[in-house]
Length: 52
Image (cartoon, one colour):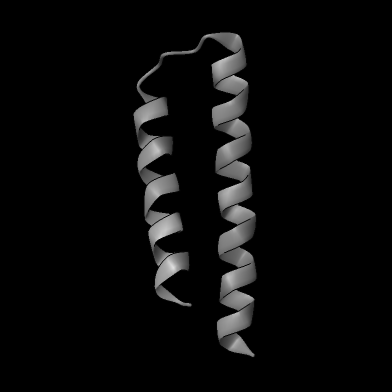
């Protein structure tokens, strides 16, 4: 149960990060936060792949 809850929380966080990246892309935002968000996205995706 705990692992599934963590997975759902990770998916929710990944969804929020992707939404922020999408908004930034639409606005043409090239601020330093983009690199941080991309790093978070990559780490979350790697963690989710490792759980399978």
